Image (cartoon, rainbow, N blue to C red):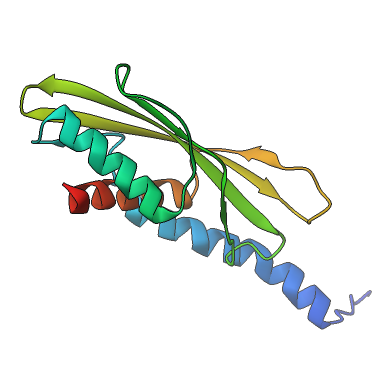
Length: 150
């Protein structure tokens, strides 16, 4: 009869815990995933446009493109610290926001966020799926910041 001898080192325990931490962090995502892909504000288009520009500026995002006639605003990449993913050195995102006039007294905001991740400061950035824990939270933050500035 052969017995397998298990050696528990700190490294082995960390390797066993990483999948568990990942699963726990994704469970948190589901709870916040009730944020819609757009939000209607019962304000005129011009007011929503200005509130969106102010909200992005206050958040520290750099606006790289804006065209009021088409309702499009694009930001530069914005760095996020990723404490839940110890193997990651960082995440970044950029926003492409479209604002559409619905009526004289309402406009709808559609934020589309793109994400990238790197595993070290010397590694290249790689695209990350939109189905991640940051997407719903950042959209919610954008919607709330716009509302605050209306």
